Length: 69
Image (cartoon, rainbow, N blue to C red):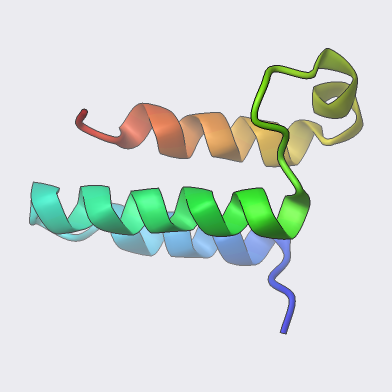
């Protein structure tokens, strides 16, 4: 089943409730990989793609910024 952006947002919120930073970071990494595959997020910054998919890129950046690298 293809997940919608709302489904990814729900998963993000659930992941952020995990008290373990290590587990949370792993789950966020997996979420980013899944988003890349489902939404075909380009590896390099693509302004046109970002303008066509503002909700996706906004959530993707939020997930990325939430990781403790």
